[in-house]
Image 1 (tube, rainbow, N blue to C red):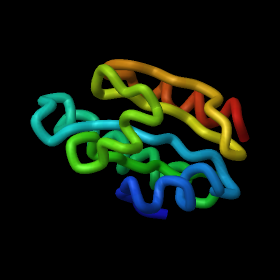
Image 2 (cartoon, rainbow, N blue to C red):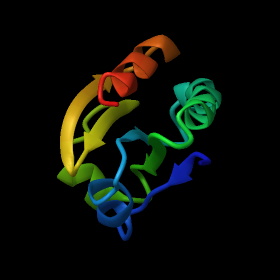
Image 3 (cartoon, one colour):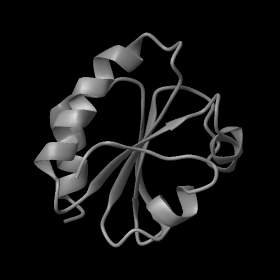
Image 4 (cartoon, helix red, strand yellow):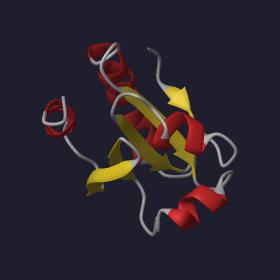
Length: 106
C-alpha cells in the first residue's frame, strides 16, 4: 500500500476505523524535516504494505485533526491500532525506531 494522505474529512475512516495499525505523520510543508522524513515513510509503507498503513496529515491544511490530536510540535508521529493511540514520537526518528514501533503491534 502506498503512503496515503489523510485529511480532516477522512481521518476517522482511514485511521481510526482501519483494520491494521496506522502510523500517522503530522507535518507541514514548511518544516525542513519534511523532505528528510518523506522518503523514509515511503519505504515504511512498502515494508509494511499488507500489515500497516503509513499516513500523512498536513496540519496547516487540516487544523481540525491537528487540534483533536494535540499536535504542538512537528514532526509528530502517532501510531494507532483499533482506533486507539498506542505510541507517539516527536521529532525526527530513525527508520529502525519506527519499524520497531510498528512491528511491536503486529
